[in-house]
Image (cartoon, rainbow, N blue to C red; front, side, top):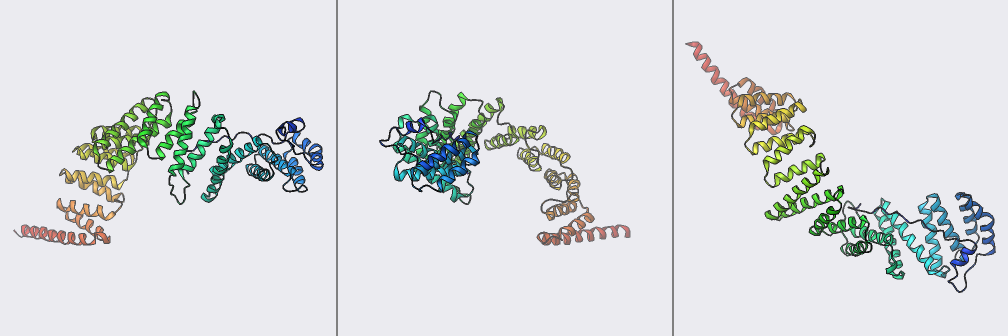
Length: 467
């Protein structure tokens, strides 16, 4: 769903039930601490405690559910049992059960305020985390939106009561991640629109995370960069990336983001016809590739191909061709028919037709029986007035299935053979071309010309024989 999301490591939910002295301590702040009913207390001591000690979670849940079935739905017994149920579900890895238990316990406490504020706030925070986790993994956008809406509501409730000076790095990271995720917007039908106010709020918390510790977590830097890009503040983004790379030159993702940013800025400038800016950003992209590749990064076939494209964009055709040629031969760039054809076309643009032909002939060794390659070779030979070589390759083209539009190859074959006065071959080629509706009109015109030429040739021969 998102351009960037932090992995959320949920803090272990502390057990809400503390037996004996622990329970008394937890309630010491209340003027009249509520107590378990005699029935619930007996069930805890006789059945629940042994099951928990034995880590028999299934039995523990059975005991808890039996108690819940018999105590008033809004009682302290119920509120505490739901806390125990949530904690037991956590031990089983049942996130949905844990969330349901905590939400029910909190709903009861919101009515009767059984728990100390500190304990209630902890429950609010844990429920917010669990909703965020469920939202992050939900596939249905509507379900995802529901979870995230709950997350934000609970988080803001928690923040209103908490002393902001006491927030930990874990707290700030979670808060930043929530606002960042919501700032990206929910993807619906392939579309995702940034919630600018939410993303700007995320940036405030991210900046706090960056200043709250001597050595901030790297995740805050990653969030900062991603938030800037999400807000289309690309100039700030690349400046921040450059600073990060001074400290972490071994970070592969930073190099990738920096190169992509410069390329995107160059493309945007080109769309606005701001040629100086486009050139400047393309040069920065090239330098980024150069720096990264010296460290062993940005050297995948896709990266190398992108670099070739940048050199083309700044009119450095020689360098682009050298990189493309070398990459196709040593595996640095994916060897596809299209990439070999691009190399040949690039040589043609520099009026290096023989090098273009050589590259295509090398491609034909990699992709034997390729009609499109033979067609391009035939075209280049024809362009330098070497029709005999062109004809040989167009014959190979049609023999290997022709091009994507077969009639094109047959028409070209017809013209070449006609120019070389190979009228019989021209006739056969024109007849093949005529089989395709798109070429029927041109083929018919050529057939008339060929027939006329054959008739003229035969008349000349007959005249010579008569003498």
